[in-house]
Every structure is written in structure tokens, then in C-alpha cells.
Amino acid sequence: MVYLSEEEGKRKTIERVLHATGCSFGFDTYKFPFSEKGGRTMGDISFPALKIENGDNTVYLIDYEMDSDIYGLLYGKWEVKLLNY
Image 1 (cartoon, rainbow, N blue to C red):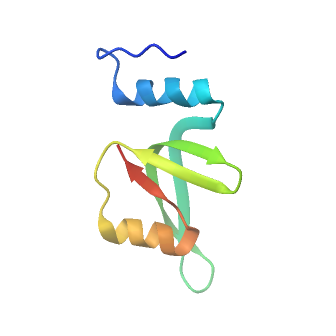
Image 2 (image 1 turned 90 degrees about the vertical axis):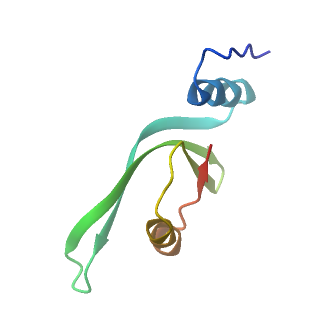
């Protein structure tokens, strides 16, 4: 049984539900490095997210808007799946 409260934030509520269902999850700042053709790292894309792992399926939950071009790069290069809550 999960007790939910309006006083808790959305992330805490999601974490409670995930914990109750036995899903593997964690909140952190995740980094994805990108490089030029020579393989030299030019920088990275980093963002805070609640990461949910279910077998081969990984989803990142974010509570803010992500630029569509950055999301396109994340999905196209690393198959990162983002959901906004």
C-alpha cells in the first residue's frame, strides 16, 4: 500500500510508487559525452532526472522542458528516452 499526500512533491510521489512496485530507479545528474570525428571529447550533455530501469528499457523522467534539438541528439545518438512529468 502506498500513502500519497498532496504536500509531497511529484518526484517523491513517483518514487514512492516505483518503490512499492519494485522498479529499479535512482535520481542523479546523468551525463552523455559527445565527440568530434577524431574521437576527442568536445563536451557533454548533462541533466538531472529520475532514471527508471526495467530490463533493457531505460526511461528518464524530468520535471522541466528539454530543448527538442537536444532531445533529438540524446535519442538519436544514445537512444535516451525522456518523459516529462
